[in-house]
Image 1 (spheres, rainbow, N blue to C red):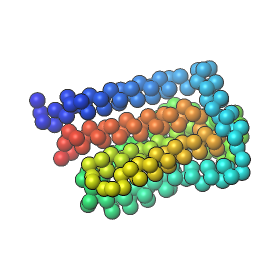
Image 2 (tube, helix red, strand yellow):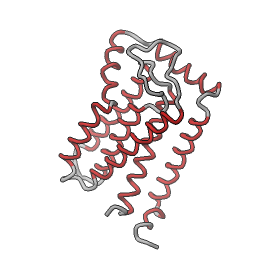
Image 3 (cartoon, helix red, strand yellow):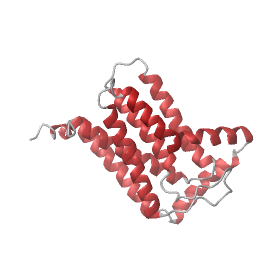
Image 4 (cartoon, helix red, strand yellow):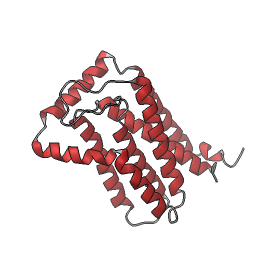
Length: 214
């Protein structure tokens, strides 16, 4: 057996494959059931709760933090981090690049392939985006770059890994909640964004661990 393929028969390889298949299965399920009554009802319940807690401070907070998941923010961040950290962290450019760009491409393919309309249960707090709703690009993008950074840091001895992980988790959750709070995405859009990013993080992990790209 090729040395590049032996990784997939380790415990880590098997568990990551099972996680990938679970995420893919859930994404396919969501994609095929977007318009079913029970999915619409679940989405409505979640958005109704977010609507019920709206107030001025939260409006300001979520309207601001949601920009962390935008390509206008993440693209410059990705370029800066790649230039600064690639010389010091092995495989940083590969892991983060594959995870981030794979996620972006997949999300926008699914958006225009499925063309799910934006939420209409309650009016959005800000302007409603014009692109389709499923999956949530903001959620997927911030999750992708966060997972990429976390995976790249796993092999380092930095003392700040736990702090970095905490900040990344906070930003992912804040952006995800913001998309529902602002009434611009369904809960299932946000979940799908997580799943797409997770799958690409696993793919990047496989590629680096198997040594396919050297």
